[in-house]
Length: 163
Image (cartoon, rainbow, N blue to C red):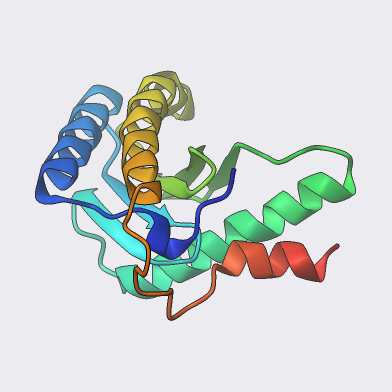
């Protein structure tokens, strides 16, 4: 099931719960930073070391990267790629799908390994997935007449282009 931008909301309690999951994940994995990005490219939250770049632009690019890779997966006969890995000389990043609506982006360096990040990632994604599914479900119960989304969902638009 795909959820549009107006089908859920993030309360202060939700934000706190998400922050706790991400902080625990960063501590356990020794990664530098975790960003949660809506698949439409909106930054939800950043935890850990503050990146030295524009996180809003980064969130948009990360969502586009994930959407493009979903299309590549479909072209080779896969439903999607649930994780993506990009390795650099000094910095690496791992992107993971959370509940088909949110992307967890993990930035890490020499202080940890890809194996350690992946090992700790699964439980964080599962826990975040439960939190977001609860938020998505609550959003579906919004009263009739709720304000429509001002911006369409980028992933839905890309999917329509390739159909």
